[in-house]
Image (tube, rainbow, N blue to C red; front, side, top):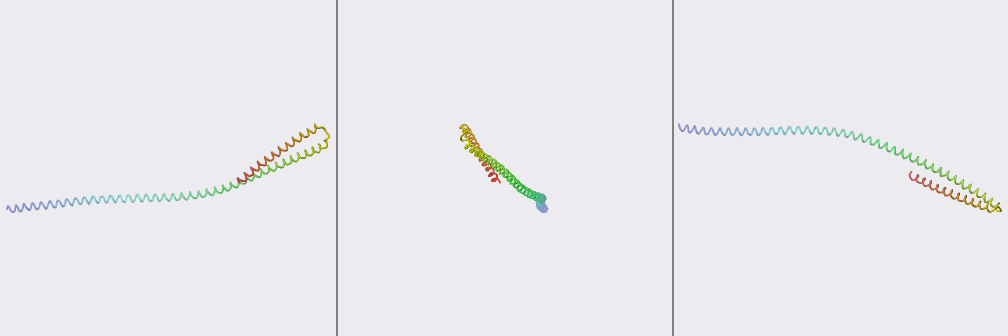
Length: 190
């Protein structure tokens, strides 16, 4: 009986060892299951995050495409407006240039007219002075016999008229130069 007990005791030890092995194996299986379960949970969470990120990126792409369409339309509208404004600007520049040229021509014509009037008046004044001087010269020749006081008066008047004539000529030349400069400036500006 001792043997049986020893055998039984030995088998109890064997059974205990087997039980321990089974328990250890069960624990190992449990740990593996937990580990696999944790890995599956992590994989599922990663998969969900991945899907979430993809959907967010798809949403972002859709928003960017919509923004791109809107911006493309805006660019087309602005491009058309720019083209229209450039055309209007060119038309206004041409109109301004034409008006400027017309104004320059009008001013030039007015200066030329004023210059011609001045020339005419100066020429008439010079001719009249020359005529008066010629008359006085003839009268002086006839009155040479007259008094020296009259002669001196006449010479004095003659000098005065000569001085007036020279002053008028100088004024005329000055005005002619002035108008010619202005006329040249107008032509240069055109």
